[in-house]
Length: 406
Image 1 (cartoon, rainbow, N blue to C red):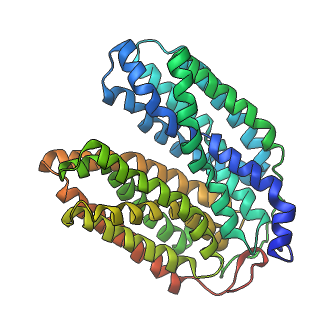
Image 2: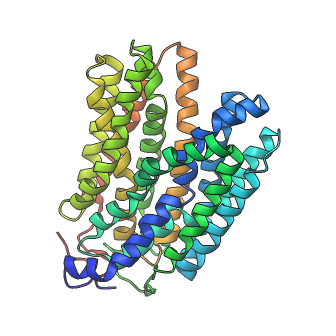
């Protein structure tokens, strides 16, 4: 569909759905469970005697669940629109929180509940909300995506301190119940979502293969680049504090440096999003991944002072990745196939992000230090950057759904 006449018009008519999408991303299954999980580690260990690894298994279970559910959600979004998919997903996410509040001593049951929450709640992931934003915004699409995906940063900033008080005063079971209430309260915002119907014959950038996006080489390049970036960046970010303590930093100093990653993620949402509207997206993505590769090498060979650069470089890359892949999926494959194409990329990327930290840790354990893992991470990030840059020559000149060239 052709975009509104100006950036001002786009935001004037689209602010309700942008607000709804930002709230949805913040409370959805890919944000709220992730940023609050750490608050339950201590209470669950104290009550059931679980190890840190056992409690942390919920994080991997969540990634696997969302990753497996995302491709199906993508097809449902293309067929039924966002509202009909997001509302049931949020209700099921809230129900899963209620079930978690009655957790017994079984780690398997705990992880299984979180896995099911990931599968059934995948409809309330960025996959759904970015499709709505892509459908409405044209001239300011990158900036709008950046604002929408800032919901993750807002969840990270607001939820932990408030929920920590609830758990301290009322216990961890009440904490899960409060999370269920938060999700339910957010549902009315979803009714602000309106996804325009996308014509089956919508024009997309360049000639489309007869077999659809699965036979389009650009899809596989995006998928490979996203897997490489997600697995390596997640591995480095999760182990960032341990890497710095291995180099001699105190826990407090390492945590302070690690917080810069979050600052860079939030900044990247807006700055990179706005840049996507003005410069070739593959060039932006490629340069940022190569910059992140340099950050990994700085962690490998540099001093503690140089870790500031590494934190910022990695944070910008992490913050840019979802914006970039979402933007390019809409541009290359059109909104009619967006749910299916981006759903597959997003799902596999989450699986890679879940497996990456595990592989990173295993390699570090085997080598006795993080040096080899950091070298591998730098290589994977560099390969991701090269793949994205290759799209500068692979992408034809046309633009989808009436977008203007340049």
